[in-house]
Image (cartoon, rainbow, N blue to C red; front, side):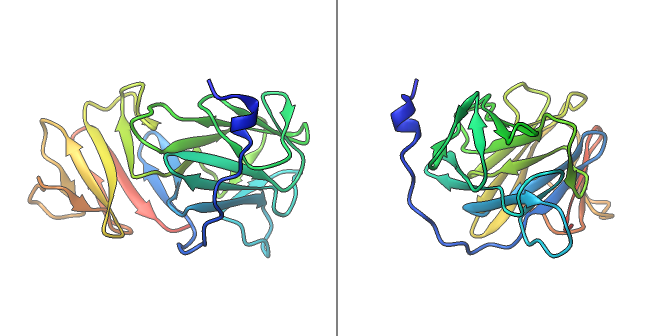
Length: 215
């Protein structure tokens, strides 16, 4: 287990180069912000506040920055934040199951179902809501797993298929593990090889359907 000292060493400060998160809408499961930038900001939701992840609730304009470094995620508090009851004062490496408490009001959990991928998931545990309304936010590493297995980053309990999203030359590709045909959009011909997931294009099979969209 990491010591409290090793958890508090700040990672390098990356440059922000990517656009705001898109939303992956999964039928029957929910919507997830796809945060593929190295740096993701979180703050209060109101029209003029330009943050990546917005929450309707009593928190600061910019409450925290999440940064990807190596195969982990760090949080930098911009307002009072405690993790599992301990106030943090500098960038802190997150571990699976950490509970972030923003000023004894907003509670957000960080979950990393498998160490084989650098992707983590943020979920609100208090009576607050994402804006737009979402089930959670994915802090993406190089791959993201969707399926019924407990190690999936997004748990889809009724799926027989397993889907892996992975980065390739600046795009997100889809690889589907299923015994049933997979279709993209209204094309009647099934797809087999890994293919890019495009905005507004529905990817679907016998037991799943998902669409990548802007906010």
